[in-house]
Image 1: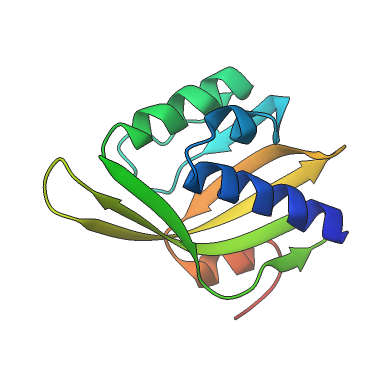
Image 2 (image 1 turned 90 degrees about the horizontal axis):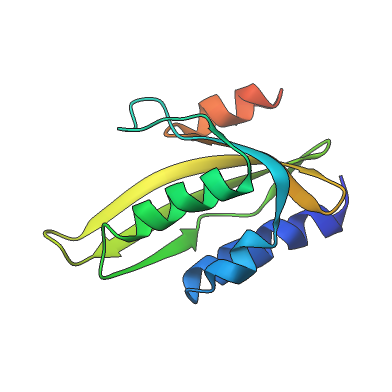
Length: 131
């Protein structure tokens, strides 16, 4: 995996954190697929960039303000990037901090597949690594 893949994922997270949904959209392939973590109220899969973006926009509406905090470094696994995060949200009730790990599959400079896990070790195992 190249550093370019990491930079694509990093750009998407940075776009999210500044509220640039158009910028985030550009990091996804038109045929992107998204799967939320097991136990998530609407786990998907979401098929196609527009469906992925609708899901992200709905998730954002749950908060007055939210941000993604990186935990540790990006992990390389072939054409995939593993990212451990905490999603902080405030407003519309109590503050929330949800730890999630995402596996991004990057092809031709865009995210083609993204899957969230609640457990970091499980995400690493999914890409053939261990903690």
